[in-house]
Length: 189
Image 1 (cartoon, rainbow, N blue to C red):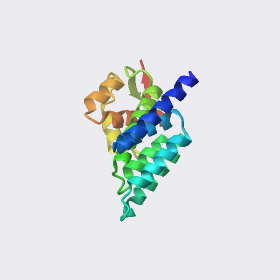
Image 2 (cartoon, rainbow, N blue to C red; image 1 turned 180 degrees about the vertical axis):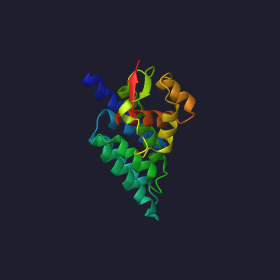
Image 3 (cartoon, rainbow, N blue to C red; image 1 turned 30 degrees about the horizontal axis):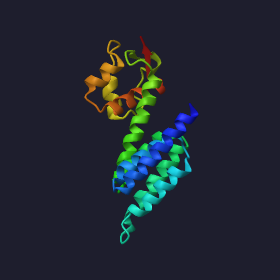
């Protein structure tokens, strides 16, 4: 199994180089980031990304350098298995709208979405407001969480809440996961 993983990482690195060579830099970054997801700390992938980062910055105007450093900071957070902090850094940073940032945000959202889904388990579970969490006035819930919480009726499943909320699936699942972790919701069958 480990050998198959190593071969897949090598294939991703090779394909990324081919794409980089043909000028498809954003797609190359996506493949190299995928290789890093499979093998965090892979020096070859980090070297390719570092080199491509330097070469893709305009020579006359290194004003985009903060965006490159933000990407590196986000990569370090991912290597430390703190994907949520990396995502927050990327989406909240000014001047970080590069193709690499966008692709990294999408990869992180997909990875974190799977984590939320795994943590919550079966999305057919019915969430209920915990009785000891009934005093929610003292909690500082974001509007999206408050909106979702207002729809928790003890009859509607997690998957239905995500669907009928009209919210982005990632954000809805994130809010439900956070409320579950905070002890506001309990999940029944």
